[in-house]
Structure formats: C-alpha cells, structure tokens
Length: 323
Image (cartoon, rainbow, N blue to C red):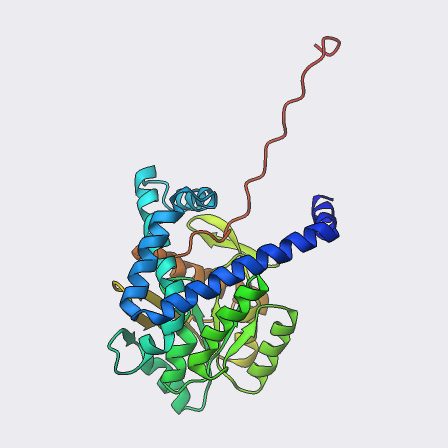
C-alpha cells in the first residue's frame, strides 16, 4: 500500500515537473564537473575529487546506512574505525567519478597505471575456444573492467545499472563507452537480461557486478548475515558449461590499480541446478567478503546489501479492564 501511494504521488503533474527540473539541474552540474575533470591531468582530477568527496560528504544522510553496513561487517571495530573506512570510501568514490573522462588514458598499455594479474587464465580459456563470465564488485574503479578487457583483445559485455537521472545517465554512458567505441554495455533490466541470454548463446563473454542486493535473489551468507544474492548468472554458467572467474579490483594509490583474475568458482554437483547455483554464489560471496576485509575502503558501502531489520511491534497500552 505504501509503495502504491508513493508511486501515485510521483505521478502528480507538479511532482513530475519538479523532478524533471531537479534532474536537469543535477545533469547540468554533472556535465560541468565532468568537463572540468576532463580538462585536468588524470592525477590532478583524481586527487581533487577525492579531497572534495572526503570534505563534502561527511554530513550526508546516506552515511547512516553505510555506518549500519559497517557495523554488520565489522562489529569488532569501533565507531571511529568505521568512520575512517567511510572517509576512505568517499575518497575512492570521488576519484572514480573524476576518472570517468580518463578511463582510456588509465587503461592504455603504456600508462603503467594498471597491473593485471592472472590474465593467463582467460587466455587459456580463449585458446581452447571457450568463453567465460567475470564476477566483479563495486570496488576501486570497477568501471575499468570493460576498458581493460577491450585493450587486451576481449570484447566483454558488462551489465550496468541505469542511473535514475536520465541526464547524468547519458553523460556517464558516453564516458563509459568512449574508450570501447560504444561496445560492451547492457542495461540491467528485463530487456538487458534477454540480451545477456542471447549473447551467451552466441558465445560472447560477460562481466557482472554481483555484489548488489537482488530483490529476487536468495538469502546467502555475507559477513554472517543473509544477503539476497542473484542466482541467474550461475545458472547461465551451469547451463552452458562456462567458467566464472572472480576479478578483484584494488586501488594502489591515486589513479593506479591492480586487477586480479582469480581461479574459477567450481561447480559442486549437488544433484540439482538450484543447489549448485546457490553453492556457487555462496562461494562468490565468500570471495567478496575476503576482498572487502582486505581493502574495506575500496568497497561502496552505500548500496543496501542486507534486508532492512524488521521492526518489533509496538506494545499496546493495557487498559484497566484487561489488567
């Protein structure tokens, strides 16, 4: 009922107009910021945006959600330690935004900015005529995945989530696709899911950011708490016999990165595709947890990864007659 009322309010003409004006203002600000970062050298842009995000984001309301997530993941840490990680997260996020216009420069073979470890695993699959799925997370500059793959000769299709603001979406998609010549991006939607199936059927490779909450997913452990996790990609891998390789992204300082292709997630053969897919994605969550523990400031703590805690029913006042 609440969702229906909220949807009805959003459809009112005045609310639609105000939303469009807000989107336009935000889009213009984003375009100007991207233009400014484009004019700067990559290290200046990355450093300036990191400083700005650390400075300006301290008082944002969304920090409350991030602190809740940090308390779930690291209950042994103090609040001060959680806030230190949060500041590091904002630094990384600011840098990532400013690095959009420079993705091609960062990924260039002669830039010396990206160290790729374990790429021979993908090369071996390709030599045998096979294909693969890459599992990555919102860590460091995750936008480098399709760009680095393209530079190394792989046309990997990556599933990306649409940004709610259509103007910011257009600007972001331009900088995402420019280094790849408009190749390799699919929107996360029903149409996008059909495109993924078609591309896998045609033998293309795929990259997926698997660390977001999926409302249609199953609860699998992450830091000891159930987190709704999609099984669709594991089922697609099982159906086609395609290996899934976890790929870790690390920010080594400034606009320098390490990308590590890890051994594939093994299929356990538990007797059913559903059970196998759950086991495989549970293992993927274990890998994700290890990545986050190693470099907690690299992960985007703002996404709602765990379900909201259920509220306890309010005690009803006891009347004198029932006492």
